[in-house]
Image (cartoon, rainbow, N blue to C red):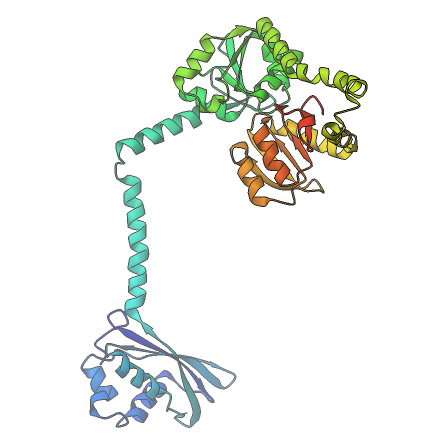
Length: 419
């Protein structure tokens, strides 16, 4: 009878059946053919459609419980959409099967081609992924993959502090100490394998122990953060040589030529201490005359410069208003920002409104325009930043150093030395 299967059909009619009594599967099939006979005309006669192969074998599954029968009916069809819908609707006219009342409800008509199309798409995705994994990549992809795998394979964790390091720490008499993991990766990429990172601003015990046994060269960024790290290392470790990246550059971003140039131009620890002391004196020197100016200014200029210097007491009076909580918060944030070239923007409750690189700091302040209480950043405070901050009514600017005198602005300017 049935000449097509659900696999070769275009549509499959799914229907449920509820019978108030006990019947068998042949009773249901007989009722379907018998009660639809002559209903739809000769062209849609179920027996003729099945004989010609346009309707497949009708599947009936029956389960009898507590004197009632329930199940489902599946009718495969190769007719078009309209004719298949008519056949499906005709099933619902059946109200009795044998002596029992029955109810047939078509749940849905499945388009077999849609299911096959979904299978084709999913299978095609799997085949494409398999092909991309096995087919030979181009030369650039090969180079990138090899370079990345070498860097990842060679970096390891060293000592009880689990510091990022190259594979040649134990076997080398000299080692290079850098600031972070990214610096280690950059040096490994260019063939320097006796390198280890501090992994923070505090000096780990592992570095202190290594400095007692090996020749240590500290390689830091060419910024204020690098100088601060050198200060801390000189205080607790036995450093032999110091190298610094070019001014304003970080070890993680410099080229192979710049790395070798910096390491060849390393200086002894004693010379680095002297240069570090001179830099500190240059930074602090502009601040020393200021208290004397304030103390001398009233007797010398009291008659005439009152309008010009009237704001000075107001500006200087803002610094004592710095609370202990604010001082602790600013100091902690500034310490965490060392070497990151980043900035934190705070509200009045000292909550962080945003974190941005210092290259975008002025643009961000200008776009927010209000609601900013303080800015803490890893950099030098300059006149352009102060001018932008004044427009946004910012109360505090905290940086590593300042090129702006406190008397030149109404904003409270704080540096590392102030905190």
